[in-house]
Image 1 (cartoon, rainbow, N blue to C red):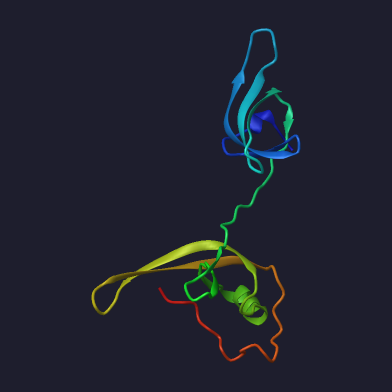
Image 2 (image 1 turned 45 degrees about the vertical axis):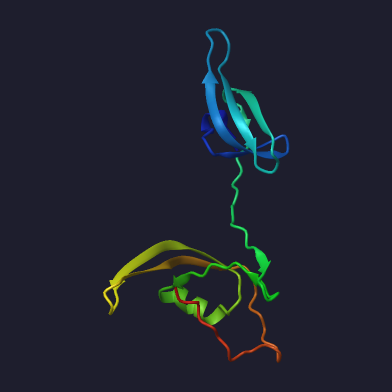
Length: 163
């Protein structure tokens, strides 16, 4: 829980059962009355925009919202259903690398927290090339590994597509 002194631009708060993003806020202080904090709020889970006023020091309820890009399914000209997928190279060192190597399988859903590392090199033709990878600090397994069945192509372990 937080108070009105903690309001910031972009903060997501829960108000009357709905989520709102703070678009603008300010404080009004009069000589004889307590200060008031006002905010223009835009609905996160609806399209409403509202203005709300609190007494200075009132409790507000900030909410942590995780935003993810959508993954779209589409059909190509041949009728094949495909997903729009982004591939990222992830590097795990030491004990984390051992754990991921032992327990991760192709197709598992994982959450990776780390930093992006970029490299630049010049190929044989003299063209500058760039690569990006995620150096993992933490990997969380969000799904169980899939047990191979007879119908699965176990020997086909495709690599990440090259750029």
